[in-house]
Image (tube, rainbow, N blue to C red; front, top):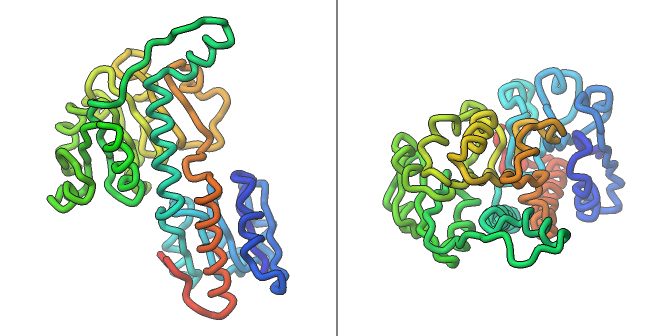
Length: 316
């Protein structure tokens, strides 16, 4: 089979998949470094979109039978067109090693902000001892915006560190409070009340395009003065201009961002110049354990395609 990876991001993924495909199948793994994958679709059986776009034009121009995401997000795939064309679309739900990895990365961003890690590193190089003064996580109110597969391992880790934990979800059922061991749970329509109690807001909700800019000026203004924001979900959730303004005005103390609406992040992005913003290159789920789990799932679906079976976790 010919398997096409869209874009040259996440460079280790093809090798992880190669190790899990049977050598006797002689599958060919191709990486398209350009945004336009159309010129490379000839003879391709499986498209792995990653951060790329697989729309109606690509589907009409190719003969591939499966769009298999490396991970959960499918915002770049035209699902309606896939259904019309009879092309299977599948993802890998954020569970196991991936969910654990993203949860740990969120903790990294939180602690790095509270202890002002960039300034601490700078002080070491400058020969300054005993500064900066940090802040303690224990006792702070942390709000999980979205109570899904990522939030569960994150909740367990945060509770071990002594935080007060609240959540925002579509339906604030009492079962959610029990499952996540929350102090309180709020529905989306009551999120301003949750934000008013929040010291650290973590965006960990599943993203759909209609949610673009959900966390804007009003939402950020509803947070406690001096609050921190962590985004490990999708960049499109956040109005980055509103975030920049909230940080510059001092309403927010800092932000930890693993995702942006445009990736790779442009070098001229204003948020990159702020000292109280810590940015990582979409590596929340980039760990050996996570990639092994995802590669196993992707390889399993390629084998199912080879045998004429319906792929697991099919969404279209």
